[in-house]
Length: 255
Image 1 (tube, rainbow, N blue to C red):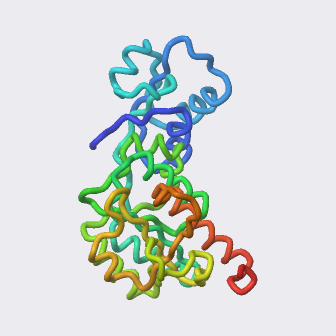
Image 2: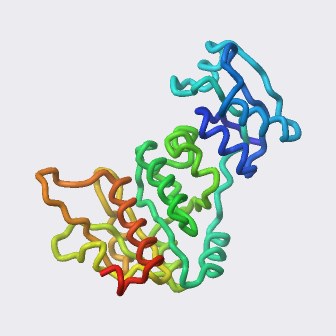
């Protein structure tokens, strides 16, 4: 079974609580007080059958995770449990008109991906979708950047994002892509209360050609300052929360 090391206190605690991965070893740096969140981590680890708990020098822990942000803890777990396309489609069909899907069009910055997926989990999306190539997967860095939120989130890893969009559309999803063109409506002007997918383009190139062609419509985030664009994670968060707001109070009342 393939393994990897998660690091950071919130990420480790979330993984233990979510119970979606097999837990092998928990490392705690020697000298750390076993109170607060560390006590919670230890409690969860002791409750997991087969999870070995070791207290090690900080140098050993830093060598294993190769990241300064480990906060004195690391967890050896099985790889992230992605959805396949069939599971993604089943979730969307079960959600019906309540389906809300986030699609990432080749985002590569782990911090952006982690931040956006954290927002997606908090906003209650049905699933998130990322392509297998030229994109950041759910790596330990992404888990840490999300503060562990991705451990609770359904994420599909797909070979071709444009084809997956077509599959989602066949199941009733209306797919909107965030686009900066002046003729696109502002994101709050569009009815996002039905079964909806929101596409966020990559940090540098934006939307890929095929994804743009497959999209049913576009959303624009107006900007009044001199900076030409928003961070991808911020742009996606605005659109997701507008969709959630409309679903809470109704689009007609949201306008």
